[in-house]
Amino acid sequence: MKHALCLRLFWGAELGTNFSSSKCIHFWPKCSELLENVDLLPLGANNVLVKMLAAPINPSDINMIQGTYAILPDLPAVGGNEGVAQVVEVGSQVKSLKTGDWVIPKDAGLGTWRTEAVLAENDVISLPNDIPLLSAATLGVNPCTALRMLSDFEDLKPGDSVIQNAANSGVGQAVIQIAAARGINSINVVRDRPEFTQLSDRLKAIGATHVIKEEALRRPEIKELFKICPKPKLALNGVGGKSATELLRHLQLGGSMVTYGGMAKQPVTVPVSALIFKDVKVRGFWVTQWKKDHSKGESAWTF
Ligand SMILES: NC(=O)c1ccc[n+]([C@@H]2O[C@H](COP(=O)([O-])OP(=O)(O)OC[C@H]3O[C@@H](n4cnc5c(N)ncnc54)[C@H](OP(=O)(O)O)[C@@H]3O)[C@@H](O)[C@H]2O)c1
Image 1 (cartoon, rainbow, N blue to C red):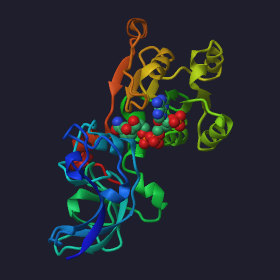
Image 2: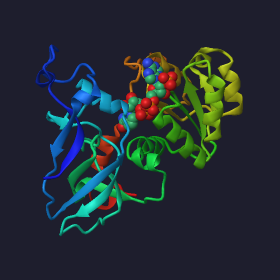
Image 3: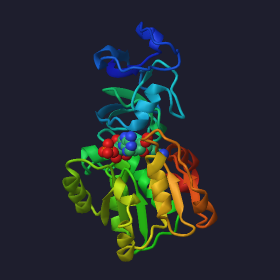
């Protein structure tokens, strides 16, 4: 029987801790305590044996461990929702994959924090293996989220503007690059830090049109920016709280704000004036749901 090393998520009680809820792990024990050798399932006709090459830790992985995410695995489970793996062996009926192919999970919940796995052919999507490994490992969540949000809420044309907070995040950097490729101005809001200039230069090097500090959004000088750049049709909010309210204040008449993350763990407050006088649209986006809705037929998502 083959084994794979997995980072396992357990009920807190199973780890012998004194934590109060039986619903989730409310603490982060030493990772070594969660590493476990797990038997690999036998390779079925429609299965592939894969070797994980790289898997990131996304904020949603942490939320899943905290038990606050919208989908939670039955425990014990293997952690990690994203990553790239290489096919090592294929079952006798597997048609779409061959040994050596690179694959990524089709949906969240696959458990990517492990060395090897036996998976159903249909649970993965193949992708070219001539792209950088780390890009492949992080392709299925953040860049897809950025692409859909720039495509599905407002009809953005070259010369239009989008404003976003958490602009240095994985999603934010994908937004910058896709917007730049489409000729769309991006106004990128980040939290202040001692190395703001270096961060600003780095974001501009990947295509950011403007990089500003959160505080600048509240100052009268922000009007100067909108003399050289059209007011945004679209705002992308990964933070919530005051940061989201500030994005809303700068939207064009009838523009949309799409919330996809809540890093500040604060609710989004919409000023009444933004609704009455600017008729802004307040929307949300979740890539996991988008993939579910587009998993079959002509619109199936693929590379
Ligand atoms: N809805 C979806 O489909 C979807 C898809 C992908 C990601 N997401 C969500 O999007 C968010 C970003 O994910 P990511 O992978 O791009 O994150 P990431 O690369 O880990 O970056 C985290 C970002 O959050 C900022 N941040 C952290 N704590 C903050 C706070 N208290 N106030 C303001 N900003 C804060 C960080 O700014 P600093 O550098 O200043 O710390 C950084 O810009 C997460 O909430 C994630 O769950 C949602």
